[in-house]
Each structure stands twice: as structure tokens, then as C-alpha cells.
Length: 223
Image 1 (cartoon, rainbow, N blue to C red):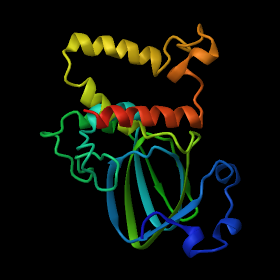
Image 2: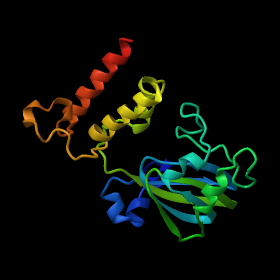
Image 3: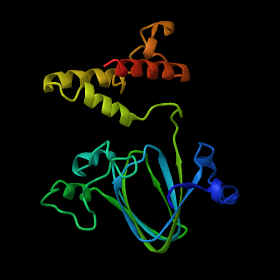
């Protein structure tokens, strides 16, 4: 049983086991029950606190910037919605995946027993190995972003559609524009405009996010 909200099967669990600062930010306890298993390196879009209840779990963490050394599989064909590494951590094939040696040099590992907890930052790659005939974990995911904001993974897919095929010189120019408008390398790109004239560059609100979503759907459906 994976990622089941305790409110559905264990009424009162959250009240008896509070994690105040996380729960106030929207993190609901979820429970995982199984036995021995291995989960390939993947990331979650939410921050995560994971607490071992029974058995042991070994976490191997890689910073987000190790993506080039982890040999990630397809973005659209995944075991559970998130892309995963193709490397078997228990027996890495360094002939096929030579850069994985560099990832392991930079990896962080921790083995947790009942009562132990770990914080996993959003977008950090992590592999999980569970041991024991009864392995139970409770975790709390939370996001500080608006709940109606779209997943950045969708933006990557759109970028592959619209930018990925371009010649290198054009990709680099678009990168400059993305850095300016999306990643705000030069500060607020609309600070020189009156607020009422900023359009999609205005302050992110639910109404503006809905407008941008409708705009993108219209453009993509019209292809």
C-alpha cells in the first residue's frame, strides 16, 4: 500500500502524531506499508519529511544538478508519474553508465530505523531501499506554491516541443530570454511597466494563472 492518506484509513492518526509546521503548510500524513523493495532514484515536486515506523529504509540522495550523471529515463513513460534513473544502484553498470561514478561521489546516504526521520528537499533525486518483513513509513509532502499552478514538468515538455529542435545558436538566445522572463535573472522583467499593462508578466494570481492556462490550451489545440 503506497501513499495512502491516513485520514482515510487511520482516523485520529494526524492528531495523535502532529508535525505542526509541516501540517500548517498543507502537509497531510500519508502511509506506506510493504516489505523489502527498491525504488530507483526519482524526485518529488514537493518538499518531504519521511518518518520510519517499522523496518529499515536506506535513502540515497543526489542534488538536483546531478541529473546529467543519473541517466534518467523517459519523461512521459514512468512507473509512477515521475522520471527515474535507469541505473541499478545495487549493481551499477559503469560501462553503460560511466558518469554515475561522479553522482555516487556526491551522493548522501542515510539508513533510518523506527523513530528516525529525513527531510528531502523538492527536486532532489532520491533512491529508497526498504528492508524487513513489515516496512512502514509515514511521510508529509507539502508545497508553498499555489495549488492551481501547473507542473513545471509540463513546461519542459512544451520546451521540447517548441525549443528543443532549434539550432544551438537559437536555443542559446531563447535561454537568455527564459533566464530573463521566467527565472528573473535580471529582476522583475515588468518593473518598468504600469501594473495594469503588464499582462502575463503581472503578479501571479489565480485569475492570471487561469488566463495563461486557457491561452496555452487554445494555442496547442490550434496546432
